[in-house]
Length: 124
Image (cartoon, one colour):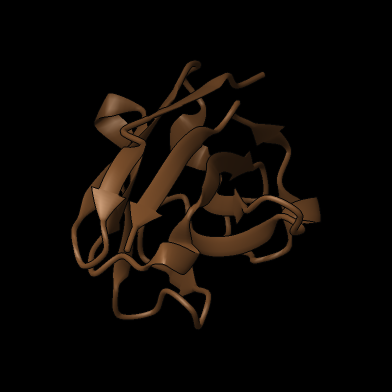
């Protein structure tokens, strides 16, 4: 089993940057695919970005492509989401999740373990 803890959320002005981290427990993190999802108030949870177990494949939602970058450091059991040029519509609770299959899939149903989430608020 894997436990995930997100950090790095907070309040940021539109156009600014923020880096989210996802710390994983357990020695099998390096075999899992990892994804970031977000959920805004009154909306369904949506895919943001995914990265394969070795970091060679990444997938992004169209809404964040070119602005956000997903990465991972398997030696540190940590994943990241670098958020640049943020917009008010990026405001949401951000969750990281891991996928035992090891891919970079966009469906939330593909993911097996989830963190508690971290709030990101973008002011205009």
